[in-house]
Image (tube, rainbow, N blue to C red; front, side, top):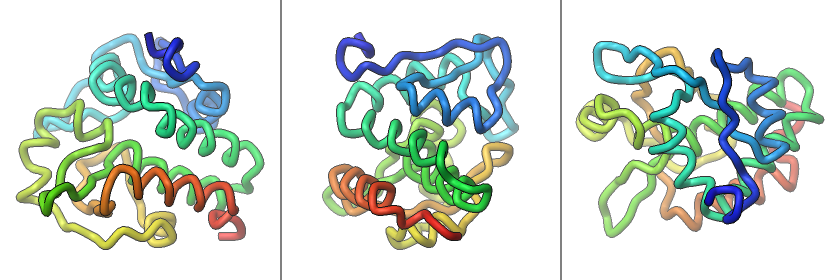
Length: 178
């Protein structure tokens, strides 16, 4: 169904792909995920995209045409970016698509696949977190590692605003020359 909806498909792999392979996959409307279940940290966080993360987090998001376009834009931009620009793109991708949060009716809610697919991350994300103002340029300068639990979240005013801002930021090359 995912392919029918947006042309994206999950791309199983025996091991976690490196960043360049992962982004090349996004460019080609493929989302890499490992075939095995990744071990979680003590808090329940699972680094990398395993089958659970792919099916519970990424696939539902990638079924949305505008989110699929955003993901592909990251892959296309990554292809032409220099090493510093690639870091900026990776960070914004992770802050939005992996650990994105949005405000809805005055309540901060999980949006990113890294949150939605991790019981441990969801349990602690509201009480152990620092909410940051929505700022893509600041995201580009802020680490968002997959090897540890995330504690800082940039709060988007809405899903629609997140999508619009990411499209503009990537298409207009705001990630360039970092």
